[in-house]
Image 1 (tube, rainbow, N blue to C red):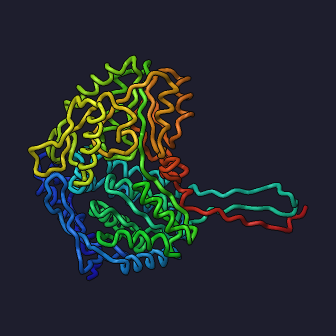
Image 2 (image 1 turned 45 degrees about the vertical axis):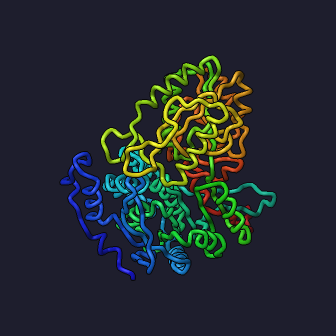
Image 3 (image 1 turned 90 degrees about the vertical axis):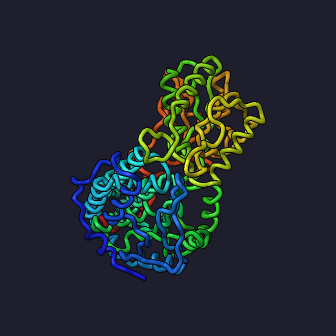
Length: 518
């Protein structure tokens, strides 16, 4: 069944009459989102609402309740979406950069207008506290602002002189074509805008396959994109649960798709790379992390604790740039551990819509089982739990885990070699600068890393030796639209955001002109 999206898009709401979130129940928030036309239980293909014969339930991890259903589409629908994007690309690539910039700006403004609705959807689907979800919405909007500016600054070069004095060469930057975008559940809004904004700014079209845990946020963004005047087919969003592998394979192997942008696990990234190899498809892969967080003896310990909390426990530890291994100099080890433990004791675990809650549930049972396994392994190998260490009981679902601090961690533990992706901070002790660098680099992945020190020479010396795509010096927050986001080693390649991000969606064409004479 297909209906025109404009049926819902014409619904208008006087935003000034909306009641503050803190006075609304979660049911009232969901009702408001529905009234605004932003709970879309259909995929979006060529500007139309597409309903499949099969659906899957989308659950709230905080309660286990069903938020709604989403179409469980097949590869036939994906084929239709790719065809729509290809048809749209033939005209959209010729749209002036200034017009693409205006589209992105209008989309950004609508996201800000409906920020509470989008944050509510994120809290329902993902479980993160509402204020944190609202922060993600602002972060998502920032990429639209950034790439709206970049859309008007796609410059080529003039190459002169050349070996042949009668020839001049100019370079053109042109959009690569249809882009396949595969996004994760942990940042269901920001991961879409970070990729799609760059693609649209470059003149590309996109087919998005959001994670089946969080499709509603993606579809709400798609609805707002249509309201912003982004043409049908430029952004298609296809949902599925039973055909995840088949759709990923099709995006990689279909010659109409010229690029894949994926955020997720290293294992899946490797599979997508293999599947894309026959067509030599351009890839951007932002994969797993195992971030070290190094606290030197000269660091401001209070600042280090605040930074560790910011990058370790955000999203209940479910971010790819989370501090996964916290290395602390022996001279300040006990002080840091004590202060971190005291801070973690103040955390409030619960439903993200409740006032005062700082940490929500984990996304699903597999996630919480992995966290339990890491804690049990650490304790068995000599680690000592100072706070937390088990599931948080007394909640509507069993997906809550107590924020945890474990001291006396060693490199024999699973938390050293696997990304925990949960609210567990293992604290390691080191005795020398080189020991800290060697321990930090002892990883097959290299996404984010963090260094806390007052010594400027040490800061640069250590940052240059860390084998990671990003280094935070005296900060636990490194993500920003202006910053190139990406890793090295098995954390993938390519950069998102920043002035470099748009180049992932462009090709360089050289045009040589002969017959120049004086």
